[in-house]
Length: 309
Image (cartoon, rainbow, N blue to C red; front, side, top):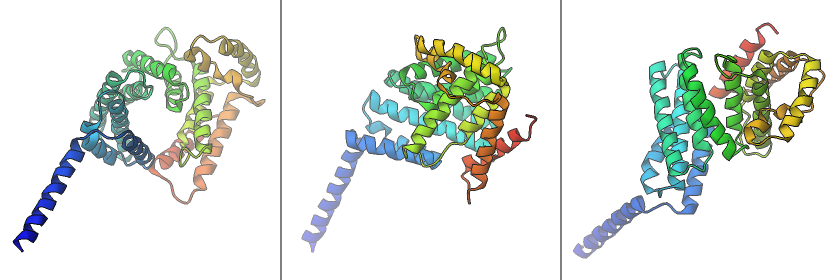
């Protein structure tokens, strides 16, 4: 009996030692890839607090450089998402949101320090600064606009296929006043918005995303409404953009003229924008149940559609 107890104690000690070793050994490349895939799936399911907890529990096992950078920017994304959705549902106050966004920016900067070649950390830094500006109001945050743009363009130059950065730039160039106060540009806003939608559609159609983010389409509709070009101007300016697109020296010059690649219908900006909104509303109203994001997208689309077009 004593031998059995002794053997059991030895086995228990062995498992304890193995668990301790597993907790301090670096994650294998396969395990890291699996973890990232799981974190990204959790993001799509809006399980952001669980993402925070999982990253905090495993970050110490990631080696310096790329592995830590991949976790840090996902941590930034989670903090920003908690802030964003929390403000919408009323679970997070503006002051709490600002604190979360500062944390998100800090994690993005840590990711940049670990691996400055990645595009995502620059994007999430830009997004965190932009959301802080949104909470404070555009006119109170003009001094932050350059930081948002610079970080977003760093992301764009590293990965032009990152739809999120086009989505952010589309809103930035729409919401800011033009010169001399700032660098807002309605034409750039529409081009970036179109590229964001096209990249999003590619991901959705390849089954990389479980569902559409309808706010991409609503934001494009808002940019079209703000630009307000007639059919003739759309055609003539597209021809001008085509040369700029083809001779672009960098991704910003290329994608700020992306509309040159689009086969435009014979309609005005506002007609196209209203058509997009009607489609968004129809799509979302046809669903039997909506996620929090979809519910917010439907509310925004309805509010925008109710305005004068």
